[in-house]
Image (cartoon, rainbow, N blue to C red; front, top):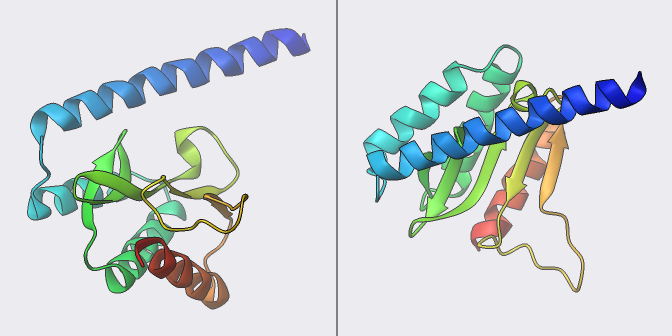
Length: 146
């Protein structure tokens, strides 16, 4: 029984990953080099599709990133809100519903300057976005683009 549930979850995640790859391909064809206005519109549309409370948190994360990293270009990446520099994604976030997780994910790619010795975090789980978490997100974003 447990193996069957695991297979169902694996099948669902595989289908979601295929859909994400399809979204990325469509994004690349539609916007080879993302236009700022079109990229932000696509990003805001992706946030608007999120159920609450992720939608509200997503808007706040967007505000924090735009305020603390104005040089990043908003866009979507695998259907998720993302921010890039010179075409390379620096950071992204996704709602809990994307992979049926219990938290919102804020992630950073290798373009982010978060290196700290030989080991550092690049993905953060957010269950609620209160002022202390907002300050931490702002500091991480500033560091990522610094």
